[in-house]
Length: 107
Image 1 (cartoon, rainbow, N blue to C red):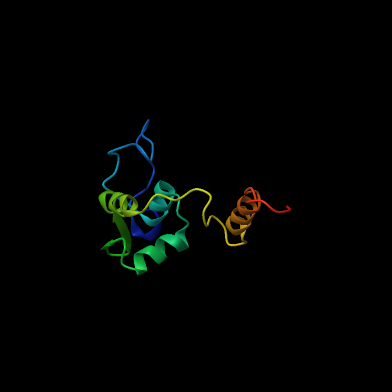
Image 2 (cartoon, rainbow, N blue to C red):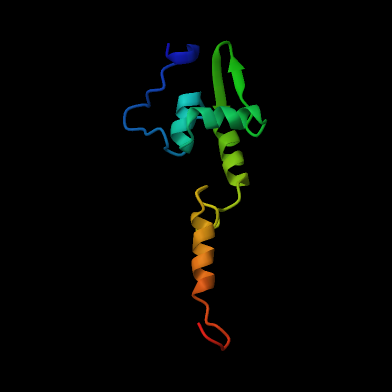
């Protein structure tokens, strides 16, 4: 038995963890690997009720369809807007505004 009282997460020979149709449900570490989320972020999403989990004794599982549903519900990011919290987007807007031509008068 692996972590959390679940069966081993080792894929069959030749199969990859992210192969379509390989698994119906993922343990938490596998769900993190499949989505790219860190463990703490995944638990935050679960706690917010955005992803449902299944419990089988001490084993926590997330259905593949549940992960797909959640990820498909996310809006596409607008590249270059609000990417970081240190003001890079604000600086980019300011730079773009300052490069606009003036309407007469001195620069």
